[in-house]
Image (cartoon, one colour):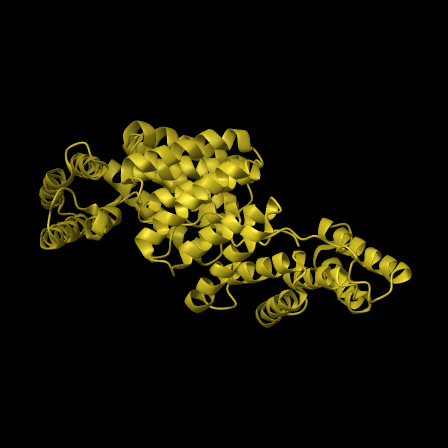
Length: 468
């Protein structure tokens, strides 16, 4: 089986950020959403503040933020400045003068003061930049991606003319351009833009800011996806350290970045280090989310995958089973993560020669693929190949051959005759035919025709917060 990754690194980067709110900050009102989210989360409080104190602080911050944004929309800049000053004072009292929340509020206040003093032509440029950014997002949602990228580039150019290239609002636009370039397949352009955004954020927001952590992580994941693991490692390690300093070692965001580093180390065949990080990730998620959360199951799935790669089937199987038992009732039997856990457990049981349960799981996975994607999808072909591997282990070559032939046919139609998947599927057909010519169908001691690697889930923010 080819790796059934739930979301590729590149698509993950194209879809979201790694900061507290998970979305891309806008150039108009940067990080307001993250500030309010921080205030309403349990771990946002400092000292011995009571729940009532935290709730009162969150209400004040949300109210002042709404006031500031409303004044800005109406063009009442003097009033907006007053609200921004109150926000800054409130955050400084809660978190301290050096906290990223306070730093962000100070930058927003400075921007608001500058906006108030802009010449009419510059203010018009700023308004046009905001309008083109919003238009770009609308076009992207409509699937007009190249037009959207052009509009976003124009918004960036106008914003830089107003604020200068080294401004956090400009960095936000650059970061979004990078993610959209990934979706369009231009990873070279994306790398250049990510590096540019990171440089600005490190200088303006400082290293210990969620947006800077997001940029560092995004660049590292992009390099990892391109096979440049030795370049990615220092970036992802830096991300982990910055996340530790920002949120502490018991925070879910820290667990996300530990997971990402662990999967990089797995790609580098440093599995013992990877397992240690994943065990830490799992414990953080258990402590914060409980034993039955899907993020815990993801960590179990990843740890099991590494044990499987090391041929430690006795350790891998129970982890896949635990992950499946969590995924099925929480996200459903047909979701990608559930299917990964199910097929991985089936492959492990097959390797341990527990064929009855293995076949049941692999056929169940095949049924889900058929239901969701149809019988002509490449994933259906992969499911067939997994079942062929199990039948081959049991010497059931007469049953395996039509499945192998069907898998090869699907790959040939969907990817072409020269694709690597097609060639591998055709090789599997040849192996089964060869076995039919030399082995009786009852020879259960025959080695598998195919050994399929287990699937792996890549780093994702835990889904306890719908914005992550």
